[in-house]
Picture (cartoon, rainbow, N blue to C red):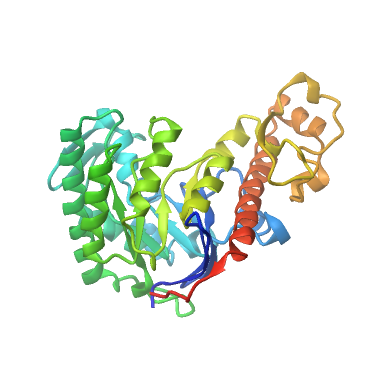
Length: 389
């Protein structure tokens, strides 16, 4: 099987405790997935990723980016190297996005047609074309456990009519993605000790912008296509946080209870906690490493209370120059166990790359700890019959 999903407990608010079984391992849900855009979680080495978070268990699943890997080093090279897991020496589960959001971000360099998207590389200006079929072919070559259907992400703000037309295109592309995946997912040559390529799972992506009726329509139409999981896309693109929450809550009502539910590209630690307690199973965001590279660390207002308010510690501030405390006195990550605020400030002020690495490691551990705490709370909720795909 490409995927099995067990829900072991649910809360009154809709939160779910579960397990996602994939070819490269089992992922405890709800889960935060660090983003490894170019087959690397920026500044953090794979071995370190495997030992972050509570109990040094590390990240159980990460995300890689189809668009970036297609441009460099190329999916055919990665195919010849045995797939992205072997290429980057990551033995745990992985998800690849479809490239749709990256193409969306190239607004001035792309042309959208019913067939697909013509765009110019942000690296060298060369011209390329992504269709749903091509996105699937690239992701099959990469070989991640979970693949995403090719979609179009609409800008914010956008009119109802513009959003409706974009959503219709996404639905057409979703069916084409599904058809290609079913016909071609067994075509990747793997090493003998690796999972079979046919074990890749495909998720559909709900669109519909900031319109509840379109979100419902999108979810209902995609559910009829019977994907193995469903993502909520097109959020965190400039809308107010309350709108993001409203769209997630509304869309969750129309997604199957027995399949994993993934919100793409969110958010701050308090946001991912909120969404997990609403019933979201999977989330990803570049924020932990991006903030870390800019000297921002997430800590708890009361270090002894790991559910207290999230505070952003600016390690660049002068007040940290001689501060002998760890970044977060209640955090058990490798950075907080060993280093002081004074040292981290020194690294940043000196332009030492290690500073970005340590900051990012702490932030990732903070996110993983947040999800571990939420899972612990949900595990004490009402036990439901096991649901499996």
